[in-house]
Length: 358
Ligand code: UDP
Ligand code: MG
Image (cartoon, rainbow, N blue to C red; front, side, top):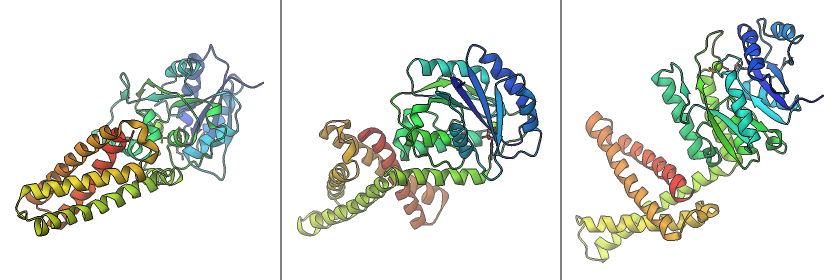
């Protein structure tokens, strides 16, 4: 008979973690009708043997994949090979404390479609993470939030510990790659309500992490793939094209004011007027071209005002980056200038997708 909750746990060489993991899950879940499916990437240790032993006492089983690899595809494999209406995904290495699971179930029962165990809400966190890993995680999260707007429904879209109602993925075309299957589900799944429950990502005790630089690059490729599929890449390109057109407007107005309009080329007002006109034409183009589908996010004039403030601040950011790189650090002037433009463009895109066209 079908269980109510299917717990999917990808494994690769997690032999030492299986027994304590199953024990703790069983204790936390004693009140629920659940099963555990381990999806194994052909471990070289006693992972499978340990699961087999436990299957005599607990509702656990394992499928060993011989030809396929990878965390995200393992989860999809697990989804296809279970039937529980509620699906939970977690790691095998006890970094995701099983004691948190009942609060995920509760949130789902209370009406959420997706529940994410989150490091980035009040009460959540990471145990003993170095500054570098923290930074990498934060930057990766910001990248997802900026370029894939639906991921903004949660603070921790990179979490590997989450639960959802099976209907969320029923019609989803999941293309699993890399590590971050939640990203894929948030982008391709159908849901109304996503909520987060805090948890602390615990330091690994047994076995070792399989996360490496290759996975980080795979993450960028995954973001790119989702952007392409969801039209967000084209949106970003449109934003850059509009920005480039603004340079032409800016230049043209400045030339007009100083050559025809009789203003002096040293006159700050000429620069200010030319810049402001370019900001306004950029706004109009972005509003009808880049963010056509998001114009309901506020009154036209409110959007214009927000865009204006963000772009002026962006110009200051660009000047600041230039001052820092060229004057303070001594990097080549044109390189410094180019980096300033890139950072200001990202700044403008980030804040405008966040604030102006939500
Ligand atoms: N894992 C897997 N296949 C892989 C890599 C990892 O099934 O190719 C499993 C691993 O056994 C663990 C989970 O995915 O249960 C998370 O991996 P890991 O702990 O290495 O990642 P980290 O926590 O360091 O991000
Ligand atoms: Mg881990």
